[in-house]
Image 1 (cartoon, chains in turn red, cyan):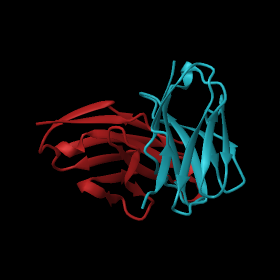
Image 2 (cartoon, chains in turn green, blue):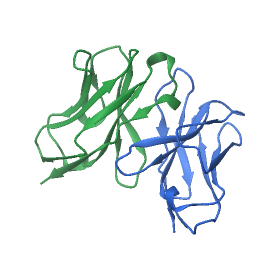
Image 3 (cartoon, rainbow over the protein chains, first blue to last red):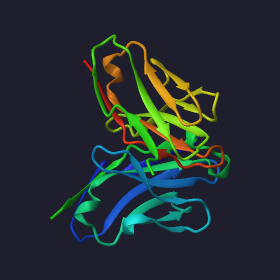
Length: 116
Length: 113
C-alpha cells in the first residue's frame, strides 16, 4: 500500500519568508510523487513531480521539492513567499512507472496563508 | 486550451433528487476519473474509466453511477441524492496506464439539503 502524510493542515508565513510544506510517504515500490496546488474555487494544478530522474525537482511559480529516500520525504519549498501563493497544497503518490492516475493517493492537504 | 470542463459549477439538490454531472476533456486522454473532495480528507476516487467503453469503481462508489459516453466525455450520476453526498466533485483525465499524473477540472460544488 502507498500513502502520504502531510504534516500541518495549516501553515502561515509572512510575505518574503521561506515556505516549507512537509510531506512524508510510504511505499513498498519506488514511487512517483507529486505536489498539486488548489486556488480558491478552482481545480488542482500540478506544481511539480518526481519520477526518479533527479532528486531535486523544480516546478512552477518558484517552488521546488527534494526527494529524500532515507527520510521518506518530499517536502515542498519556496525561498520567498508571495501573497499569490496562498492556496491549498496537496502531496500525492503513485506506484511509479507501473501505475496509472487512478492509483494516485492524495494527502489531506495543507492550507498556506501568506501574511502581509 | 480548455483542458477538462465540468458542468455545472454549483448545484443545490433536495434529498432524493437525481442529477448528472458532466465532464469533457479536449486533450485526447484515454483515462478519466471522478473524485470527491471533503474537508480534511484530500481527494477520494469515486469511479474511473481507463479507456473508452470501460468503467470501474474507485474508493467510494456507493450512491453513484458513471457513463463513459465517448473518449471525450465522462458523466457522474447521483440517482437519489443524500446529504452525505454534499461535496466538491472533480473530474480529471490522464493519458492512461503508465501516465501517472492527472489533469483536473474546476470542480462542481454540490449541496444536498
